[in-house]
Image (tube, rainbow, N blue to C red; front, side, top):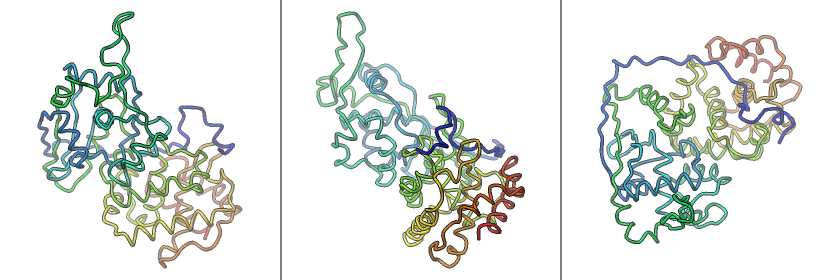
Length: 392
Protein backbone atom coordinates (compact mmCIF):
# COMPACT_ATOMS: atom_id res chain seq x y z
CA UNK A 1 0.00 0.00 0.00
CA UNK A 2 1.32 3.44 -0.87
CA UNK A 3 2.17 6.00 1.80
CA UNK A 4 -0.42 8.34 0.29
CA UNK A 5 -3.32 6.01 0.93
CA UNK A 6 -2.36 5.59 4.59
CA UNK A 7 -3.45 9.19 5.23
CA UNK A 8 -7.07 8.35 4.42
CA UNK A 9 -9.02 7.59 7.58
CA UNK A 10 -11.13 4.39 7.71
CA UNK A 11 -14.61 5.03 6.32
CA UNK A 12 -13.52 8.05 4.28
CA UNK A 13 -13.57 7.89 0.49
CA UNK A 14 -10.15 7.10 -0.98
CA UNK A 15 -10.81 9.33 -3.98
CA UNK A 16 -11.34 13.07 -4.37
CA UNK A 17 -15.13 13.66 -4.27
CA UNK A 18 -16.50 15.56 -7.25
CA UNK A 19 -19.63 17.66 -7.54
CA UNK A 20 -22.03 16.40 -10.18
CA UNK A 21 -25.56 17.82 -10.19
CA UNK A 22 -27.99 15.07 -11.14
CA UNK A 23 -30.85 15.62 -13.53
CA UNK A 24 -34.29 15.38 -11.93
CA UNK A 25 -36.90 13.04 -13.35
CA UNK A 26 -40.33 14.28 -14.34
CA UNK A 27 -42.45 11.42 -13.11
CA UNK A 28 -45.46 12.04 -15.32
CA UNK A 29 -43.33 11.45 -18.43
CA UNK A 30 -43.11 7.73 -17.64
CA UNK A 31 -45.49 4.81 -17.72
CA UNK A 32 -44.48 2.20 -15.15
CA UNK A 33 -46.29 -0.87 -13.84
CA UNK A 34 -45.55 -2.81 -10.66
CA UNK A 35 -47.09 -6.28 -10.37
CA UNK A 36 -46.80 -8.54 -7.29
CA UNK A 37 -45.99 -12.23 -7.80
CA UNK A 38 -45.51 -14.97 -5.21
CA UNK A 39 -42.72 -17.41 -6.15
CA UNK A 40 -41.74 -20.27 -3.89
CA UNK A 41 -38.15 -20.64 -2.72
CA UNK A 42 -37.25 -23.45 -5.13
CA UNK A 43 -38.68 -21.51 -8.08
CA UNK A 44 -36.56 -18.50 -7.12
CA UNK A 45 -33.47 -20.70 -6.84
CA UNK A 46 -34.14 -22.19 -10.28
CA UNK A 47 -34.66 -18.70 -11.72
CA UNK A 48 -31.21 -17.69 -10.44
CA UNK A 49 -29.61 -20.90 -11.69
CA UNK A 50 -31.12 -20.49 -15.16
CA UNK A 51 -30.34 -16.73 -15.16
CA UNK A 52 -33.98 -15.74 -15.59
CA UNK A 53 -33.38 -13.62 -12.51
CA UNK A 54 -29.98 -11.97 -12.84
CA UNK A 55 -27.75 -10.52 -10.19
CA UNK A 56 -25.21 -9.26 -12.73
CA UNK A 57 -21.80 -8.57 -11.35
CA UNK A 58 -23.16 -8.73 -7.81
CA UNK A 59 -24.72 -5.23 -7.52
CA UNK A 60 -22.73 -4.97 -4.35
CA UNK A 61 -20.72 -7.61 -2.55
CA UNK A 62 -22.60 -10.10 -0.42
CA UNK A 63 -22.29 -8.44 3.00
CA UNK A 64 -24.31 -10.59 5.38
CA UNK A 65 -22.59 -12.65 8.06
CA UNK A 66 -23.55 -16.23 8.88
CA UNK A 67 -25.82 -15.32 11.81
CA UNK A 68 -27.88 -12.83 9.79
CA UNK A 69 -28.11 -15.25 6.86
CA UNK A 70 -29.17 -18.06 9.20
CA UNK A 71 -31.95 -15.92 10.69
CA UNK A 72 -33.40 -15.34 7.22
CA UNK A 73 -33.41 -19.07 6.50
CA UNK A 74 -35.03 -19.77 9.89
CA UNK A 75 -37.73 -17.17 9.16
CA UNK A 76 -38.53 -18.87 5.86
CA UNK A 77 -38.67 -22.33 7.47
CA UNK A 78 -41.07 -21.32 10.25
CA UNK A 79 -43.20 -19.12 8.01
CA UNK A 80 -42.36 -15.64 9.28
CA UNK A 81 -42.83 -12.88 6.68
CA UNK A 82 -39.70 -11.47 5.05
CA UNK A 83 -39.36 -8.24 3.04
CA UNK A 84 -40.51 -8.40 -0.55
CA UNK A 85 -38.05 -8.51 -3.44
CA UNK A 86 -38.12 -5.96 -6.28
CA UNK A 87 -37.29 -7.11 -9.81
CA UNK A 88 -37.02 -5.10 -13.01
CA UNK A 89 -38.28 -6.76 -16.19
CA UNK A 90 -35.49 -5.86 -18.63
CA UNK A 91 -36.93 -8.03 -21.42
CA UNK A 92 -39.37 -10.93 -21.77
CA UNK A 93 -38.66 -13.47 -19.00
CA UNK A 94 -35.49 -11.62 -17.99
CA UNK A 95 -35.35 -9.84 -14.64
CA UNK A 96 -32.76 -7.75 -12.81
CA UNK A 97 -32.70 -7.53 -9.03
CA UNK A 98 -33.37 -3.97 -7.88
CA UNK A 99 -33.71 -4.73 -4.18
CA UNK A 100 -33.29 -8.03 -2.37
CA UNK A 101 -29.89 -9.26 -3.51
CA UNK A 102 -28.74 -10.20 0.00
CA UNK A 103 -31.89 -12.27 0.60
CA UNK A 104 -31.77 -14.00 -2.78
CA UNK A 105 -28.07 -14.81 -2.50
CA UNK A 106 -28.61 -16.17 1.02
CA UNK A 107 -31.22 -18.58 -0.35
CA UNK A 108 -28.93 -19.47 -3.25
CA UNK A 109 -25.94 -20.15 -0.98
CA UNK A 110 -28.03 -22.14 1.51
CA UNK A 111 -29.40 -24.49 -1.14
CA UNK A 112 -25.88 -24.79 -2.59
CA UNK A 113 -24.76 -25.54 1.01
CA UNK A 114 -21.75 -23.22 0.87
CA UNK A 115 -21.16 -19.86 2.58
CA UNK A 116 -18.60 -17.39 1.18
CA UNK A 117 -15.53 -16.32 3.13
CA UNK A 118 -15.53 -12.58 3.81
CA UNK A 119 -12.15 -11.88 2.19
CA UNK A 120 -13.12 -13.63 -1.06
CA UNK A 121 -16.42 -11.89 -1.78
CA UNK A 122 -15.03 -9.21 -4.09
CA UNK A 123 -13.29 -11.92 -6.10
CA UNK A 124 -16.52 -13.94 -6.23
CA UNK A 125 -18.31 -10.87 -7.59
CA UNK A 126 -15.79 -10.73 -10.44
CA UNK A 127 -16.14 -14.46 -11.16
CA UNK A 128 -19.93 -14.20 -11.15
CA UNK A 129 -19.77 -11.19 -13.49
CA UNK A 130 -17.56 -13.01 -15.99
CA UNK A 131 -19.31 -16.40 -15.97
CA UNK A 132 -22.87 -15.63 -14.92
CA UNK A 133 -22.59 -18.25 -12.17
CA UNK A 134 -20.24 -19.59 -9.54
CA UNK A 135 -18.58 -22.67 -11.10
CA UNK A 136 -18.59 -25.90 -9.12
CA UNK A 137 -14.80 -25.90 -8.84
CA UNK A 138 -15.00 -22.52 -7.06
CA UNK A 139 -18.07 -23.47 -5.02
CA UNK A 140 -16.27 -26.50 -3.59
CA UNK A 141 -13.00 -24.66 -3.04
CA UNK A 142 -12.40 -24.28 0.71
CA UNK A 143 -10.43 -21.09 0.12
CA UNK A 144 -13.64 -19.42 -1.12
CA UNK A 145 -16.40 -21.18 0.86
CA UNK A 146 -17.16 -22.98 4.09
CA UNK A 147 -20.11 -25.28 4.83
CA UNK A 148 -23.38 -23.37 5.23
CA UNK A 149 -24.56 -24.81 8.54
CA UNK A 150 -27.13 -22.60 10.27
CA UNK A 151 -25.75 -20.58 13.16
CA UNK A 152 -28.63 -19.52 15.39
CA UNK A 153 -28.65 -18.28 18.99
CA UNK A 154 -30.63 -20.08 21.65
CA UNK A 155 -34.04 -18.69 22.48
CA UNK A 156 -33.78 -19.82 26.13
CA UNK A 157 -30.79 -20.58 28.39
CA UNK A 158 -29.54 -24.16 28.05
CA UNK A 159 -32.04 -24.74 25.23
CA UNK A 160 -30.30 -24.90 21.84
CA UNK A 161 -32.09 -23.65 18.74
CA UNK A 162 -33.55 -26.71 17.01
CA UNK A 163 -32.31 -25.54 13.59
CA UNK A 164 -28.81 -24.48 14.60
CA UNK A 165 -26.15 -26.65 12.94
CA UNK A 166 -28.48 -27.90 10.21
CA UNK A 167 -27.86 -27.36 6.51
CA UNK A 168 -30.08 -27.73 3.46
CA UNK A 169 -29.54 -31.47 3.14
CA UNK A 170 -30.21 -32.14 6.84
CA UNK A 171 -33.45 -30.13 7.24
CA UNK A 172 -35.43 -33.36 7.24
CA UNK A 173 -39.20 -32.81 7.27
CA UNK A 174 -38.64 -29.04 7.15
CA UNK A 175 -36.98 -29.17 3.75
CA UNK A 176 -40.25 -29.41 1.80
CA UNK A 177 -41.87 -26.51 3.64
CA UNK A 178 -38.71 -24.45 3.04
CA UNK A 179 -38.74 -25.25 -0.70
CA UNK A 180 -42.42 -24.39 -1.07
CA UNK A 181 -42.50 -21.25 1.09
CA UNK A 182 -43.72 -18.28 -0.99
CA UNK A 183 -41.83 -15.00 -1.21
CA UNK A 184 -43.47 -11.86 -2.56
CA UNK A 185 -41.73 -10.43 -5.65
CA UNK A 186 -42.75 -7.07 -7.10
CA UNK A 187 -41.97 -6.93 -10.81
CA UNK A 188 -41.45 -3.44 -12.18
CA UNK A 189 -41.76 -2.77 -15.90
CA UNK A 190 -41.19 0.48 -17.76
CA UNK A 191 -43.70 0.67 -20.59
CA UNK A 192 -42.89 4.15 -21.86
CA UNK A 193 -40.58 5.52 -23.09
CA UNK A 194 -39.10 2.16 -24.14
CA UNK A 195 -35.51 3.29 -24.78
CA UNK A 196 -34.91 5.71 -21.90
CA UNK A 197 -33.02 4.19 -18.96
CA UNK A 198 -33.11 7.25 -16.72
CA UNK A 199 -36.30 6.23 -14.91
CA UNK A 200 -35.19 2.71 -14.02
CA UNK A 201 -31.82 4.15 -12.97
CA UNK A 202 -33.66 6.44 -10.57
CA UNK A 203 -35.66 3.50 -9.22
CA UNK A 204 -32.43 1.62 -8.55
CA UNK A 205 -31.02 4.74 -6.92
CA UNK A 206 -33.94 5.34 -4.56
CA UNK A 207 -35.31 1.92 -3.78
CA UNK A 208 -33.41 -0.11 -1.24
CA UNK A 209 -35.24 -1.50 1.76
CA UNK A 210 -31.94 -2.22 3.49
CA UNK A 211 -31.49 1.51 3.99
CA UNK A 212 -28.27 1.92 1.99
CA UNK A 213 -28.68 3.21 -1.54
CA UNK A 214 -26.66 1.61 -4.28
CA UNK A 215 -23.82 3.71 -5.63
CA UNK A 216 -23.87 4.89 -9.24
CA UNK A 217 -21.52 2.21 -10.57
CA UNK A 218 -23.35 -0.56 -8.73
CA UNK A 219 -26.53 0.47 -10.52
CA UNK A 220 -24.69 0.72 -13.82
CA UNK A 221 -23.24 -2.74 -13.34
CA UNK A 222 -26.76 -4.11 -13.03
CA UNK A 223 -28.34 -2.18 -15.90
CA UNK A 224 -25.56 -2.43 -18.49
CA UNK A 225 -23.72 -5.63 -17.67
CA UNK A 226 -22.05 -6.93 -20.84
CA UNK A 227 -18.80 -8.28 -22.26
CA UNK A 228 -17.47 -4.73 -22.01
CA UNK A 229 -18.20 -4.78 -18.29
CA UNK A 230 -16.46 -8.14 -18.03
CA UNK A 231 -13.44 -6.34 -19.50
CA UNK A 232 -13.67 -3.61 -16.84
CA UNK A 233 -13.70 -6.26 -14.13
CA UNK A 234 -10.62 -7.95 -15.60
CA UNK A 235 -8.71 -4.69 -15.87
CA UNK A 236 -9.66 -3.73 -12.34
CA UNK A 237 -7.65 -6.57 -10.79
CA UNK A 238 -4.45 -5.94 -12.75
CA UNK A 239 -1.52 -5.53 -10.40
CA UNK A 240 -0.21 -2.38 -12.12
CA UNK A 241 -3.66 -0.76 -11.85
CA UNK A 242 -4.02 -1.64 -8.17
CA UNK A 243 -0.58 -0.08 -7.60
CA UNK A 244 -1.80 3.34 -8.69
CA UNK A 245 -5.01 3.04 -6.67
CA UNK A 246 -3.00 2.25 -3.57
CA UNK A 247 -4.72 -0.91 -2.29
CA UNK A 248 -4.91 -4.51 -3.53
CA UNK A 249 -8.60 -5.39 -3.20
CA UNK A 250 -11.44 -4.07 -5.44
CA UNK A 251 -13.64 -1.36 -3.97
CA UNK A 252 -16.89 -2.67 -2.46
CA UNK A 253 -18.94 -0.04 -4.29
CA UNK A 254 -17.08 -0.37 -7.61
CA UNK A 255 -15.64 3.15 -7.68
CA UNK A 256 -12.41 1.75 -9.12
CA UNK A 257 -14.35 0.19 -12.00
CA UNK A 258 -16.12 3.51 -12.56
CA UNK A 259 -12.74 5.23 -12.89
CA UNK A 260 -11.67 2.84 -15.67
CA UNK A 261 -15.06 3.29 -17.35
CA UNK A 262 -14.67 7.05 -17.17
CA UNK A 263 -11.21 6.88 -18.72
CA UNK A 264 -12.56 4.97 -21.72
CA UNK A 265 -15.59 7.28 -21.97
CA UNK A 266 -13.38 10.37 -22.06
CA UNK A 267 -11.12 8.76 -24.64
CA UNK A 268 -13.89 7.60 -26.96
CA UNK A 269 -16.89 9.85 -26.41
CA UNK A 270 -15.65 13.14 -24.91
CA UNK A 271 -16.81 15.24 -27.92
CA UNK A 272 -20.38 14.21 -27.02
CA UNK A 273 -19.99 15.00 -23.33
CA UNK A 274 -22.59 17.09 -21.55
CA UNK A 275 -23.63 17.01 -17.88
CA UNK A 276 -24.35 15.18 -15.81
CA UNK A 277 -21.32 12.86 -15.57
CA UNK A 278 -23.62 10.11 -14.31
CA UNK A 279 -25.88 10.40 -17.34
CA UNK A 280 -22.86 10.51 -19.67
CA UNK A 281 -21.39 7.33 -18.18
CA UNK A 282 -24.78 5.62 -18.33
CA UNK A 283 -25.07 6.38 -22.04
CA UNK A 284 -21.51 5.26 -22.74
CA UNK A 285 -22.12 2.03 -20.83
CA UNK A 286 -25.25 1.32 -22.85
CA UNK A 287 -23.50 1.95 -26.17
CA UNK A 288 -20.47 -0.11 -25.15
CA UNK A 289 -22.64 -3.15 -24.40
CA UNK A 290 -22.81 -3.68 -28.17
CA UNK A 291 -19.01 -3.86 -28.63
CA UNK A 292 -17.78 -7.03 -30.32
CA UNK A 293 -14.96 -9.34 -29.16
CA UNK A 294 -12.35 -7.76 -31.45
CA UNK A 295 -12.99 -4.23 -30.16
CA UNK A 296 -13.00 -5.40 -26.54
CA UNK A 297 -9.71 -7.25 -27.05
CA UNK A 298 -8.18 -4.08 -28.51
CA UNK A 299 -9.35 -1.92 -25.59
CA UNK A 300 -7.87 -4.42 -23.18
CA UNK A 301 -4.50 -4.28 -24.94
CA UNK A 302 -4.68 -0.47 -25.06
CA UNK A 303 -5.30 -0.16 -21.32
CA UNK A 304 -2.47 -2.58 -20.52
CA UNK A 305 -0.10 -0.67 -22.81
CA UNK A 306 -1.06 2.54 -21.00
CA UNK A 307 -0.17 0.94 -17.67
CA UNK A 308 3.15 -0.21 -19.16
CA UNK A 309 3.84 3.35 -20.29
CA UNK A 310 3.37 4.49 -16.67
CA UNK A 311 6.04 2.24 -15.19
CA UNK A 312 8.35 5.16 -14.42
CA UNK A 313 5.63 6.88 -12.38
CA UNK A 314 5.54 6.59 -8.60
CA UNK A 315 2.70 4.73 -6.89
CA UNK A 316 0.96 7.93 -5.81
CA UNK A 317 1.29 9.77 -9.12
CA UNK A 318 -2.48 10.13 -9.53
CA UNK A 319 -3.07 11.25 -5.95
CA UNK A 320 -3.86 14.82 -4.96
CA UNK A 321 -2.12 16.67 -2.14
CA UNK A 322 -5.04 15.67 0.10
CA UNK A 323 -3.83 12.07 -0.07
CA UNK A 324 -6.74 10.88 -2.22
CA UNK A 325 -6.95 9.56 -5.78
CA UNK A 326 -7.63 12.35 -8.28
CA UNK A 327 -10.12 10.95 -10.81
CA UNK A 328 -9.97 14.02 -13.05
CA UNK A 329 -6.19 13.76 -13.29
CA UNK A 330 -6.34 10.10 -14.20
CA UNK A 331 -9.06 10.25 -16.87
CA UNK A 332 -7.51 13.32 -18.52
CA UNK A 333 -4.09 11.64 -18.56
CA UNK A 334 -5.50 8.38 -19.92
CA UNK A 335 -7.45 10.15 -22.67
CA UNK A 336 -4.48 12.33 -23.67
CA UNK A 337 -1.90 9.53 -23.76
CA UNK A 338 -4.18 7.04 -25.54
CA UNK A 339 -5.75 9.48 -28.03
CA UNK A 340 -3.28 9.07 -30.92
CA UNK A 341 -2.82 5.29 -30.46
CA UNK A 342 -6.62 4.86 -30.32
CA UNK A 343 -7.10 6.74 -33.58
CA UNK A 344 -4.38 4.59 -35.18
CA UNK A 345 -5.73 1.40 -33.58
CA UNK A 346 -2.32 0.78 -32.02
CA UNK A 347 -0.91 0.59 -28.51
CA UNK A 348 0.83 3.19 -26.36
CA UNK A 349 4.55 3.16 -27.02
CA UNK A 350 6.11 6.27 -25.46
CA UNK A 351 6.50 6.34 -21.68
CA UNK A 352 4.57 8.87 -19.61
CA UNK A 353 7.10 11.37 -18.29
CA UNK A 354 6.79 12.07 -14.54
CA UNK A 355 7.84 15.71 -14.97
CA UNK A 356 5.05 16.36 -17.48
CA UNK A 357 2.45 14.76 -15.23
CA UNK A 358 3.56 16.99 -12.36
CA UNK A 359 3.37 19.98 -14.71
CA UNK A 360 -0.23 19.02 -15.55
CA UNK A 361 -1.14 18.73 -11.86
CA UNK A 362 0.31 22.17 -11.17
CA UNK A 363 -1.11 23.83 -14.27
CA UNK A 364 -3.37 26.73 -13.12
CA UNK A 365 -6.05 26.09 -15.75
CA UNK A 366 -6.19 22.35 -15.05
CA UNK A 367 -6.20 22.89 -11.30
CA UNK A 368 -9.00 25.45 -11.43
CA UNK A 369 -11.10 23.18 -13.67
CA UNK A 370 -10.66 20.36 -11.13
CA UNK A 371 -11.79 22.23 -8.04
CA UNK A 372 -15.40 23.23 -8.63
CA UNK A 373 -18.17 22.41 -11.09
CA UNK A 374 -15.97 19.51 -12.16
CA UNK A 375 -18.69 17.95 -14.29
CA UNK A 376 -19.48 21.08 -16.31
CA UNK A 377 -18.83 20.81 -20.06
CA UNK A 378 -16.45 23.75 -19.89
CA UNK A 379 -14.27 22.30 -17.12
CA UNK A 380 -14.20 18.81 -18.62
CA UNK A 381 -13.10 20.34 -21.94
CA UNK A 382 -10.39 22.43 -20.22
CA UNK A 383 -8.95 19.43 -18.39
CA UNK A 384 -8.83 17.27 -21.51
CA UNK A 385 -7.35 20.07 -23.63
CA UNK A 386 -4.63 20.95 -21.13
CA UNK A 387 -3.74 17.28 -20.70
CA UNK A 388 -3.29 16.90 -24.46
CA UNK A 389 -1.21 20.08 -24.69
CA UNK A 390 1.09 19.17 -21.81
CA UNK A 391 1.39 15.38 -22.07
CA UNK A 392 1.36 14.64 -25.77
